[in-house]
Image (cartoon, rainbow, N blue to C red; front, side, top):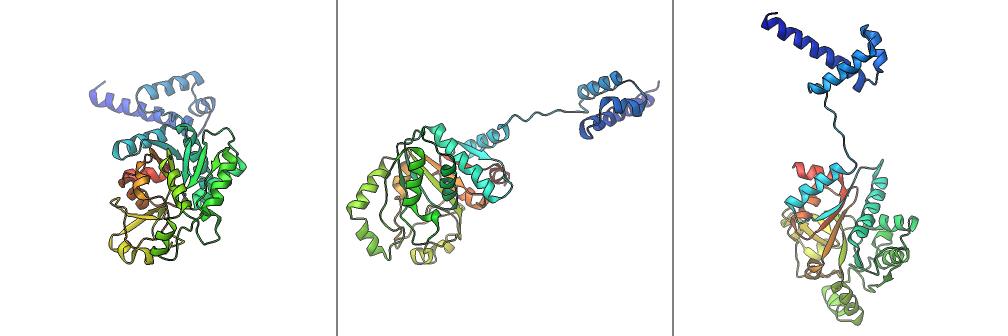
Length: 316
């Protein structure tokens, strides 16, 4: 056989092996049915499938559960301040995804052996409270829990910090500590007055003793707006804010935008920075831009988010 004839015969053989492999692996046909179609024995089809694997015509990849998420987290560890976390797959809708994220957040708290927990607010925190009401964790390691931000004047449950803390403590078997002050007083002068009270001093002590903070990562602009125009003027637009954590805003470079007129009552940024574990939780709707800015801030040590969100960020 000449060289050209040999190459042609070999190519024909590989095509036949690929045909058999496609029928078996992609079209789910039985080996006996493929043998009947080609007029050969079933053992020959089995040998052809083995040869197809040996020649690299067929490559079999096994995806271990959690392996993809572990790879994404490892990439984050190499490129950010993130030390670990929990990534979840998409649910059938946003609510289903948020339930998976809530479960992931509780799993991470368990892994870390958290004892003194500070909790932010927002849609996902509200979903987490709802998940806990359906799935109590009385054997949790958490002993104390407190809000990281005061109560909002809006009726939405997600922003009622003390009530969320009360419900979480009830389901976790922990002691609640409350912040009986508004998140947004009427003015900077009122904030200064409120922050000189015994109520504030007590919560300030709780903040300094935290081992873990659970902080929402959201988008900017956000709804509700949290009086951002009064607190910041045009700063958020000029410094190109892209996201929010608690009711602090940051830009794509990770800069937390500061204002001398900010009258919000929440954990001071310098105390938050000193917390050993800061878990960023992203809802089903958190954008790539907001997550990117949050990670560049260097605040976060752990992350709870959708796998697809992290993959999209890493691909940028």
